[in-house]
Length: 284
Image (tube, rainbow, N blue to C red; front, side, top):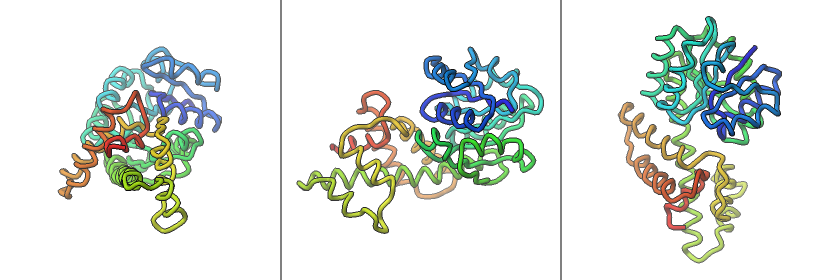
């Protein structure tokens, strides 16, 4: 089985390595070739362009920043996809983006699975993502080898083209909320004249503790933000969640505030920093 990964940034590179460890033949491409070349040392074939990358693919995985970037790349690649191949779209692109990409696949007669992943860089590198998939039931067996390689489990959300996006946005609303809440608590603890480590110690091991609070809180306290989930991606996702809330008719006031915090942090961040940099928006 040949699996192609288009987009080898924070997440895509780790996913490609997980596919290689599972014994699959992997072809990779990235707009910035320097991010794809190191994967050759792991056994991947590095393609020069999307069209040549997908020529022999059984599964095409896309892990690009947003719907526009994905549509641009796949408009070039889809005409070269062979009959019977499946496109599994793994990025977070929102409801409209999910529908638009499904229509693009249908236009070219390529089977499509909406498959955003839950997890950050380390789970991607370890093959421990959760795949939030949606698509026709008769495609599940075809994509299982790839999904089993990159994730510990696959949750099938439904059969509509954007059902995976629906579940991903709901889960990301939680992730983005608890990260910002941790930033608020760290900033407040420090602002009140206490060592912010006391906050993490106070919640440790209790019912209100979480891995995210401990991991992201530590980054916030140390003021070091090596990217695992980029703050620019967090800002993008809050915007997509606000749009989904409008479509669902649910109250979006909290998420609008969070969108402002993440966008402020993204503007203040130096380069591509982790979402924990949201603490900058709290003045800390």
